[in-house]
Length: 322
Image 1 (cartoon, helix red, strand yellow):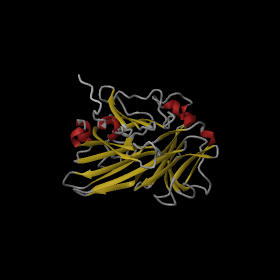
Image 2 (tube, rainbow, N blue to C red):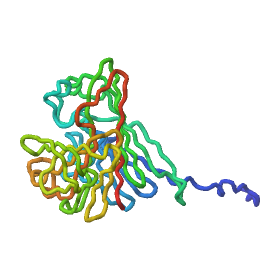
Image 3 (tube, rainbow, N blue to C red):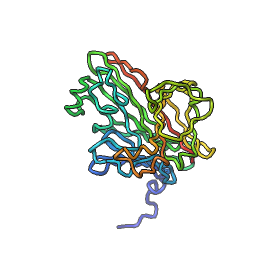
Image 4 (cartoon, rainbow, N blue to C red):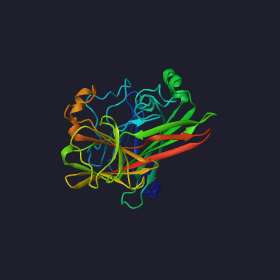
């Protein structure tokens, strides 16, 4: 080949592509994972569209996952962020959902991965993707026959998980695809990883009405004006006094560890099983309650009603301190 002294150099001069978010489907097409160029990462199990891992740029895990959690699709995942729909807990007095299992079927159904979208940041020197949004879908067609019989309504769900440099956002769109109205509840059951339950407090719930599900009988009361602390088995449904737009924060050792901002999710459930975790078969280790706190954004007090063709949307953004 003749060496040309004036050969084109355009190819060599073309700058490389900006770093992109990497999205993969692995484990026999059961887990969708995403990693930003800056190192933040998330993993979502298609069974339940359950987020089972969220790491910051340094590789530090932000979610608590039980050592006995099942990720093979045999049962709901203990830990991470399971998705509750169309009923929170069990509702024996609500005819439409009375036949459903605990927390409904969304966390025990296999979702479809609908794809990704990304955004670029111009404020960073390296450029590239600053976030990646992963969409998952569930409809009546995806349900087991048992679930269809227990809840025979036509519906469509789109669940979006957005991984950013600053935090993790989750949102759900609920659509009534049928010809008659139905009601639902939904909740994002976030298990946040902490270092020591005795050193945390939760702000944003001061002077708020809450249902205490541990008391017998179950009672409704108002929290004090101080931040919430955990010193025993806790299962409370708060309606924050400052409204749905006010952030709720987990503070550990005097420093803010997580901040949760909600959109159209009016309730916040705070849960820690304490030593009663010994009665939960898939909870491990038995002292794991010391390293987790559930602060769960949801619409679970009463029911959301959708007429035929109507849609409803709610979501949260969790920001983690670095």
